[in-house]
Image 1: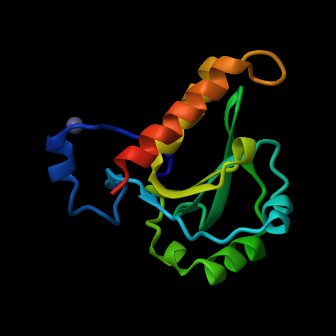
Image 2: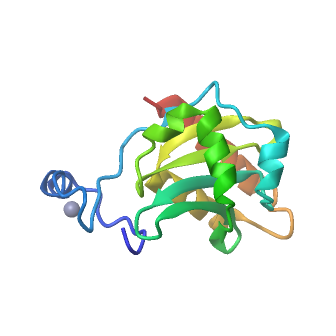
Length: 161
Ligand SMILES: [Zn+2]
């Protein structure tokens, strides 16, 4: 947890660490949960001042706070998130209270007019960040990266629990 690192994907480790929840390791959930009725106004989104209409928010136990990350050509970047903005989101969207610390994130996709919200496993969020880092070209990203992002969300939408 301290390094925000996914360590292993095998069943043996999943069983071994299943009861070590408050130790150094946590299990990452397998499924994303779509949040169709999620409430987030233009003003609230704007207040986060992110350079791209994609982000994930998670509660970090080691940091003792909610952290916002957005994908960039250089990988996942950390944004300074006003705590009050997060509290407002939770008040409007009580489902956020069920988000698991460290291993689950609120994943927001507002690219090209999309309004998709998920409680997503942390490894899926980093998969998205990796796709963007790998496929981003030039200043605007290029067609390939936006196709990859579209494919990622289509897959997440199809597989969610
Ligand atoms: Zn393993």
